[in-house]
Amino acid sequence: MRPWTGSWRWIMLILLAWGTLLFYIGGHLVRDNDHPDRSSRELSKILAKLERLKQQNEDLRRMAESLRIPEGPIDQGPASAGRVRALEEQLIKAKEQIENFRKQAGDGPGKNQEILRRRIANGVKELWYFIRSELKKVTQMEGSDLQKYTAGLLEDLGHQQRSIMTDLHHLSQTDGAGDWREKEARDLSNLVQNRITYLQNPKDCSKARKLVCNINKGCGYGCQLHHVVYCFMIAYGTQRTLILESQNWRYATSGWESVFKAVSESCTDRSGTSTGHWSGEANDRDVQVVELPIVDSLHPRPPYLPLAIPEDLADRLDRLHGDPSVWWVSQFVKYLIRPQPWLEKEIDEATRKMGFKHPIIGVHVRRTDKVGTEAAFHPIEEYMVQVEEHFQMLGRRMHIDKKRVYLATDDPSLLQEAKTKYKDYEFISDNSISWSAGLHNRYTENSLRGVILDIHFLSQTDFLVCTFSSQVCRVAYEIMQTLHPDASSHFHSLDDIYYFGGQNAHNQIAIYPHQPRTGEEILLEPGDVIGVAGNHWDGYSKGMNRKMGRTGLYPSYKVKEKIETVKYPTYPEADKQLPQ
Image 1 (cartoon, rainbow, N blue to C red):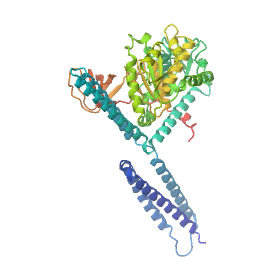
Image 2: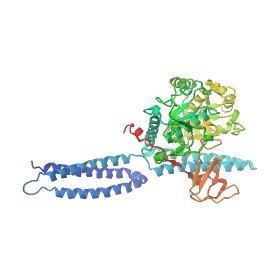
Image 3: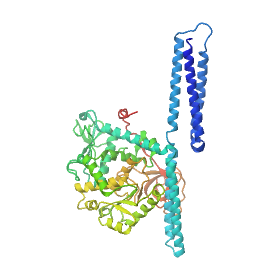
């Protein structure tokens, strides 16, 4: 056999690889004929690849020409060996490009498609709020015929809205998008949980930089949990191990670790060579142990406070989730509330005892100390309107064997009222928890057990109806984000939008112009930054146009969220521990 035969085998293998790639691309385009939108998105990528392949094929042709079997004696020297090595490298690159293309073909929808899908869903929802609000005003006018007409119109509009939202839900699951979201959410969560674990378990605790947080803030469980989350975010941003001081916790004197797993397996000692109170990240660089105050007294304020998200994860989160800042908060909640075995067992027993199963909608009604101070009174009828609407929505996606409601409240009389007024619903609740949530029982271990169970079950429901003025409701909503790829729309709040106590400014950006029609409205121009005060859930939000300094109402669909990003540390050493 002549010595050049092996080289020609390499050449044939390379040409076969290129042919396989071109065949794969062609097959991909043929398969996508029924999906012209997706094909058009891929086409520009494919044309660029083909241009590169054309150039590489020309290079191969020239290389093949240079390796043409010569007449006469064959040179088997170093030059020949070099050409063979170059061909081997080309073959490896060909295989890599084929593999990369296959990965890209199944890599889920594009970022812009996901953002647009959520914007459409939100726009339809806001349109429905507006129409419903305006037509309700008409029903108060004189004339029974007019009232009957508008009632029918509202019902018909509701059917149309649910149909559109159902179609959007199916759109979100098509072409493997649902599978992609599941995987991406799992990968992102594993990434963050691994980084937190790495931070919390330094190799040498005596030399580790630490941030000390005392849990006993003067407020309830939800508020205290959010206080620890705030501490954790500062610790993560400043690369300090969080030391949680929880002895003589007002809910459990044995401390946090008697209920949930310790925040560190190897570093719980707060001692260090130097200790000081928070004076800013730059000023504290040479201080080993820093004590953090409550967020209300924090000065200077670091950039790591909500609603900011890490810059290195921002693109992935913006593509995956409808409210990236809530997702980011949820990851710290997820790490913190890992239950001790006894609590896990108690949750399982309560699940079986109450018959908790899907489909089910969660309702949280906060009364007692909140009403008249932090929140208005809302009768059960207001909650049940939203419950019924969402059951009608769920009925378009699945079989509803029974309309179940998990009712969590600090008003023990509410369960019987709900059962009397809504006999076609099954209310699942533990009235002993309601009694333990009363002001006279609130700071006890039994009360702690009750609020943990309520939050757990609320987070497990298919949809949440509550008031975001309540910390319990917001914690349940945060935990929801850890159970689904994107549960940002799985709620209806009767009062506030989502917020995190002590957060930095919540801003939106105008995407459409708006000319005020009344003295209550404000002017919008595309690009204007709006400081959000709240959503009235009637198609309008309230906020301040920061450019013009005016506060008022504006159509909610004419703005988008302004995602704030921060250069958090990226913990490359932790990422190396993840399976590739």
